[in-house]
Amino acid sequence: MLTHPLGKKKIIRRAAAQPDNEHFAELHPVLSRIYRARDLSSADELDRSLARLPSPWLLTGMETMVQRLLDALREQRSVLILADYDADGATSCAVGMEGLRLLGFERVSYLVPNRFEYGYGLTPEIVEVASRQNPHIIITVDNGIASLEGVAAAHAHGMEVLITDHHLPGDSLPAADAIVNPNLPGDSFPSRALAGVGVMFYVLMALRARLREIGRFAQREAPNLARLLDYVALGTVADVVPLDHANRILVHQGLQRIRGGQAHPGVLSLIEVSGRDHKNLSAADLSFALAPRLNAAGRLEDMSLGIECLLATSAEQARAMAVRLDTLNRDRREIEERMKLDALAFLDRMSLLDQANEVAGLCLFDESWHQGVIGILASRIKDRLHRPVIAFAPSEGGDLKGSARSIQGVHIRDVLSDIAAAHPALLQKFGGHAMAAGLSLRLADLPAFAGLFAEAVGKRLNSLNRERAVHTDGPLDAHDLQLDLSAILRQAGPWGQGFPEPLFDGEFEVVQARALGAKHLKLLLRLPDDDRVFDAIAFFVDTPERWLGSRRVKAVYRLEENDYRNRRSLQLNIEYLECLDTVR
Image (cartoon, rainbow, N blue to C red; front, side, top):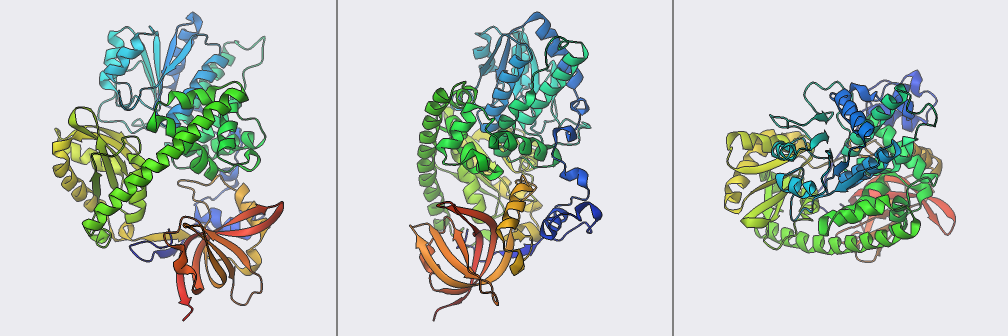
């Protein structure tokens, strides 16, 4: 964060692409500037009501999907939801389980593959396991778009397959009975950024609308699907999909329900064990506090624990499972820290920490690494080097499982697709998004793949995305450094991927600096020509003691409210720091 081994970052101030206009006239000037820098141009884009969601019927395949579900409902066919083993998959499963039951399905169950036994998605092997439950229909959530063999295997067992997914499709689509995926070629849905949980929620909205049309709710009130929005918000933020308008609506509405105490017991228990307050929960809390605990089940054991926590009907049941998830997350952090030290030691031996400008894309492997944690490891090393990284761990039969993380400007799935097209026998399977992907290959092929990966990434890197930079919304005047502005910005989100939380930059005099433990830095800062002193804190600093002699700093920070002993005050949360002057 603050003491990066590659040196200083360039501070780039976002330009307000849109001119100021009457739509933002009543907003705080700083907020107007922030919105315009994110290309918002009208009041419609600020409307976060559910009525502003795009119609589900714009999604290709929705008519077929709903008709298949109506037929299944009339005959009360048994439905098996096949989930993915991450937080998006778990929340998608919970939305599907509860939503289908609310709409009248009586025979709904789920299956989530153990990542260590069956891997990802609807494989022929997991179809064999599913067939033991004799379901009439398999509904995939957050997976399935690449499952050509799995769909064929399910059909061979006499099962229908309905795919709900958001991952990018390959050259061929599976022969499923219905597919809903906003990333299908030619799809007219205005948001390609829906997470898997958002796609499943949309299917339920369309099904409820059709049930209304045919008079299913003439004698009773239609179920309120908004009760599922806490799941939708958690899964959407956890999967780090861009927060376009549709996703901002879904996350905002879910957060509103959570803050109002209307969340499910499982979600509230995850909030409690993470030490957060549901009344003030933010999108960042979903990302950094709840999602890792939910993901810990799929990373280290079995995501069924996470799904059961989400579906728990009592606070007592939910809390017991949330405590277990919290313990798993602590274990995950210990494993991750050991793996990170291994990776950094390797990079240091290879002098890559000093020569990262010459490294386009990096592949890392250690036979001791844990398959469930390589994604996080790749993300940490990517942040450190500002380069796309793939971390590999051993899999069954001498193969490797890899998890890739990328930087802005390099579409990682396209990189893998290019390699696979040029070398068809190299990758056994792959899939993912622009910023994250998964793959498998043979151990013997790793050296060749690593070279091809670096070459393919190098073709996509330019001088702009090679540069280490931090983007800000510019400086704040002294009169804007107020608790009120912090509250305004907090309510103006949700902030996240593709709709970044406001960051500001400025030069400050250091009144006081002290280390908090071994990893954090506490500061008292003052703007030049201003008498006020501001609390500031920087978390997870490599060597906080090296800043204790600083007299003047350049800081990139976000505004936060610090509530200590019922005393509310403004705090600057430091994202990046440069020393401009030290005590001699």
